Image (cartoon, rainbow, N blue to C red):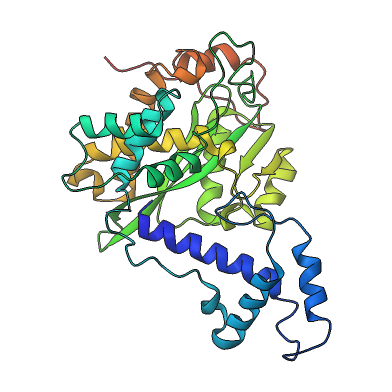
Length: 349
């Protein structure tokens, strides 16, 4: 995701959170008696606050938001942008992916060592400052700053992984490149993907020109046709996954729809690693011919998924390939009516 887009979405989430806390107070006349008592009640509760682990908001802070809203409406609740946004403190997406990959591969690395390794790679543009605090925030957002299990620990670091294919699929959306649509102008794309938790197999994925339920449902349908029915579908709280239509589809299929807790990065780590692999290994290899249509970029995507990603050893599944893991763990799959899981294709010579 582009940093500016990411920042705009975060600011909007923060403003919506602030509005949610004061929405029942905005129509009270200024100076209304009992206002501070109402604010005190809200201050005593715990809240899921975007972008922070804090759980409480002070009454005076909410009073300030109420005052801001009365002066400038919703826009006044948006967090102020930093004057240095997009400059040295913003890490380009390719470098951010590299930093996250380095830390994910070796959890023992401290933030200074991650920065030192990145600077020594030759990939960091001249003049780009990797401030420790900025890198720490980046790694924290990806859930990589928690203590790693000790060597020889009996605790399985994959303790949240399922054993059988189809027990849980997860889905998310990644911002993709622009492609030509209908032979006319370029449109921004979004990569919608479904990943099997136990095997890391991509049950289906496709680039689309929107990130809504209408774009997601055909991807889900193809995944079910290819790989059978999952027992659970784990998604975030984006609008694409919050529609009543999707809930109804899952209910009719007997699939338990699970929404992640807001602003908790841990649950999305596996599919975010897949997206990072897409950005690092696939996107840099796309040529002009791959951008001529949605069909072209999706053909290229699936050639890479089936021929490279599914055939590459994966640390998270004990060094097996997703193809091998699927063959070992897909014996209990439940099939949708009229469908059967497709066998994993062989790697091309």
